[in-house]
Length: 311
Image 1 (cartoon, rainbow, N blue to C red):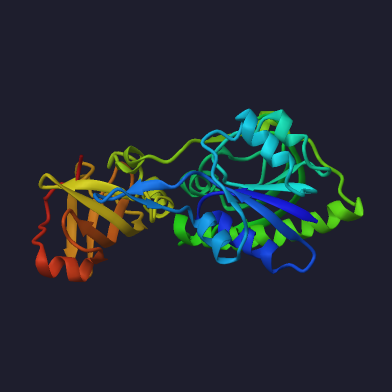
Image 2: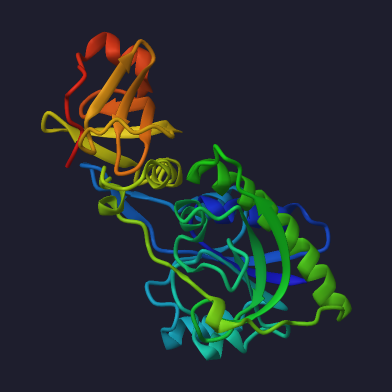
């Protein structure tokens, strides 16, 4: 098939590469978000998808507004049997959805209708889901509301982080897309409507989301530490400085101390009382310092029993 690929972040790259490496499909164009200025220099930086496309000699389009009439007309002139969309970042108009023979297929990082929206992988961890997965979906004009085509499940491991899950799911998304396109070409798919009543919304991640409340139970705090790793990261405060928490364990123990109180300091960990249970901190990062294991951290920073970790 001739494929127009629309995507932007790292998550979309393995799916694009799967299409490029396939001998059954031709990526005729890539559409991605415009270059953005980064850092103090204001240097323009390509999206990960644009970098991959240019490395493989694929024409790239970066419209400010994909719904702009002039861009829609340009899109209609590109050879296209199907449009594949992966974390693109703009909503497609019905006019665009109607362009390809096989419509627009989205690779979505959840088992729809669970977790529609911008950050489904991370919210699956934050809310304690035991499994997630990839769904290929026939796009409609709504937000992740189209009919489901194929799904594959992925177990969320006890030590799963947002970063590790991202990498597994991106690779899985590429494989599932190729299976989906194969079935589409053979006319073997039977789209299944979503049950909207079972849907949940995975809102966009913000730095504020990483602000930990030590009155939460330890299990929830530990999920946030994993789910927000590597961005935006979970954090608290120690003596007025931001302390990022990168790895921790739940300890089902009550000390009677106020939530946020350091109740124990060992050579390789810091124990903190929470609203329910304790949290053993194993990897941290103090403001202005490098990320390090607790043993290395404690060699340079003095934390004592009775100290407070709180916003």
